[in-house]
Length: 328
Image (tube, rainbow, N blue to C red; front, side):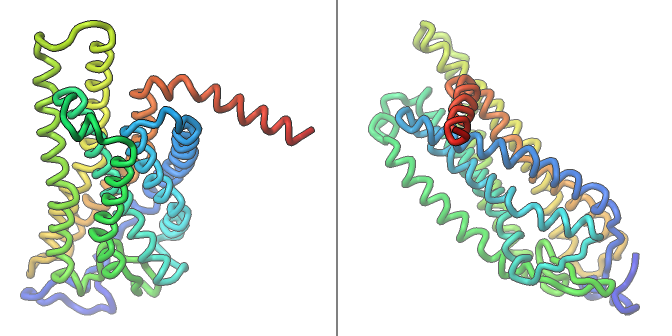
């Protein structure tokens, strides 16, 4: 563990002078982010194209999925800067504004994905458990678009402070882009970081679990509608539950657990640099899992939407025919 400018650490103060030896980031993050970019970008473009080309059959779930793909696409477009940064040994040459923007995109994508997944889950819950409810029966695509607009406003309000705390700094004579905040602002960031975790992850996750608990109870009952149509609806709802649960467990849960632990340790006085580095490594090691939601969302939803599963070859045929016409 190194100390900035050779200064020591007072036992009664926060360890603001710690500089971590994080060589693992150079080995781990560029390959992971490159995979997310190479797979997530075309997949989300494909999802957006398929939904837009089938707008006559647009459903409320498709509206939420479209906005989910837009959030993932927005994040994927910011990855080249991060890939270059970590490949160069955590050196950020793109300036302070780009640093703030990239960090904002990361958290906006993650919390936007969480809320849109929650909307999709609630829509599925209404369709199975309360098919005659006014919201489900009369709330059409226009209502879904209004909900999406509200989600974007909430996500922007939640994550905008991220762009305020994230900034550039100097370590080892190199410019770095802080993920959460500079170490000197650890105490000031702590309340916001915890509030973002509770409001942006824990509450939606709890609400989603409640929806799927009721949904599972309804699906297990034998007194519901019978027939192939009802069976298909139940099967689709079950697939959706597995998809969303997998996304939350793989992408979001490890990240928020390690982030909360790191925030708590970082804001505690008297913590030694080696202990702080251990928690920082655990937190930053789970960051790729959070990034992979940009890949998991289109892949998993592709296999749960039979209507869209049958469309890729049609989409390719249209693009091929259009290219041939332009060639002539």
